[in-house]
Image 1 (tube, helix red, strand yellow):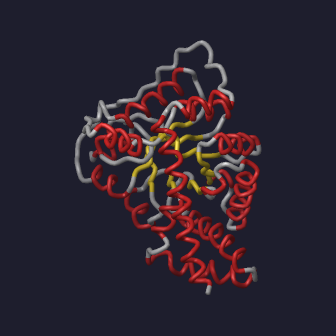
Image 2: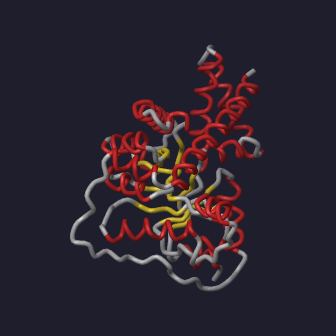
Length: 316
């Protein structure tokens, strides 16, 4: 048994890529995308015919240049996501534009549009997760969408305050980050960490513990891995979204792996809900989470802007 096969017995494996060939090879249950991954996939040969077809339709439907680009981003994200759903039994996560991270109403409207585009392609909402940044506004948007039957994946999650607000909102899934947390601590301390001491692994284990101990329904999906050791340190987490390079490492080595995350549910009642003031204070008091959330939103926004430039060039 390969380590990837062994891991699949403990956690649901999700592909952190838009690369169709990688998804075919590693056979994940779900797949996640984001603006950075869509930008990478934009250059892949396997998508060029789909891109040309999508942009041709946009040209025919819309005259205004800026509106064309905005619509092209949405249609292309959904077109790529639809291709991915043909290769997996589960769901694909599609992200709301990072520039909307602090606008609840605009995030909800964008989610509705993405779901509409999926349904036009014959992909039901039960095959899609709408990805939103774990800002207060993003969490409130997800709360409303969940009530409408549109399930969400809350990303760029770096703190307990963010996780608890998501649990309170009843979101379907959260993606606490591992690698970016550890990156911050390595830069600040100059230290190297074992998988057991790794700050990102420790953080996600704590989130899993809270979800399990207090019986929250939200699925926890570890994300943003840098090393195989970080992945193995979270074996048993509900889901793990993993890049093709690390999936390859897991597939190339044989052996059993040890469960690190277990169900510890024992609390008689849930934690008191966290309100906006407590959320913002908790985030403010965590320098790592504050910096990485802001940085992550900027990076995704920059990559979306680059994608928009490339689309504008292709649209003429």
